[in-house]
Length: 359
Ligand SMILES: [Fe+2]
Image (cartoon, rainbow, N blue to C red; front, side):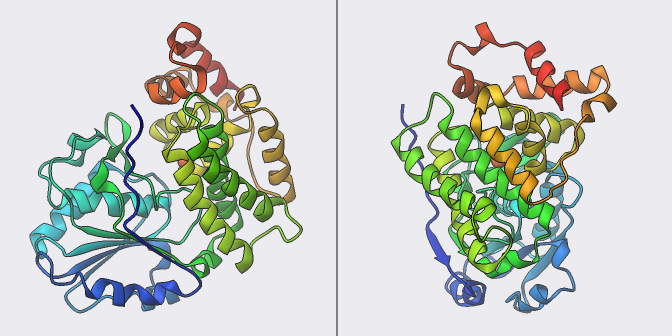
């Protein structure tokens, strides 16, 4: 069976594209109970970008704090309950922020029309009804959340996406100027999520020409942004990184992530470690999976003087490592890709624990 992939309906890309949001939303404002909900990274509260959000009087604006932890099912359920109780079903949901905000906006667009907790829908095609119109406006580039068909949430039991055709954004607004406020570490970790998506996509069973075409372009752009003559944070590179993120996401969508993302999910689920950072912590130690790419990654760290602590596992109890390995082991699609369909014969939870002890 080949993937039958739902793409974003519409994409606007370019410097200042943020200013087109109000016009784009105008055509949608008559739907449902005729108001829009803006979900915005709390970082922007009181900042210049917050004043530019085209919210009308009837709209709701939520500044969500996603600094410490990955988005949770509770967070989405609470937002949904509040919106429905106060104003009803929105015409649309607009997410303005990084990957976590993209995930919350996508999940919320489904949860305002589907009953019960979002925990019930963590998995593939479990959502029963179409959600409302939703728009993604990334302010950090790399996660590919703007194009993925999953809204990853951490619940009491699992870290897993609400994954179905209705999850995919109806509209993406890709304005590279929005990336100018990202601090260097965040810029690096999140950009590396894109780099790692491409490397993982090409290092396994599900790799194919579709994935390669997007992945090669995304990798070339990442190399210019992080290692080129003009490497670093500037508008020219932000324009490239925004597209690298999209293409990396598309490369990944038609292939799969592998060992690095499996370990990263364990770190996020058990310790709350942010996704891009968790990927970097793991990728550094996965030479047998990703070969020269790990050396290239290390040269990027060096070039940009990024903090990537070592020796973290010394602080972890046996129970913590065990719990993380349990999460990572239970991601069979990733191990299928990374090791092969017979991975269970070659690979155990003990092997995964050994990888965690390297960190
Ligand atoms: Fe990722």
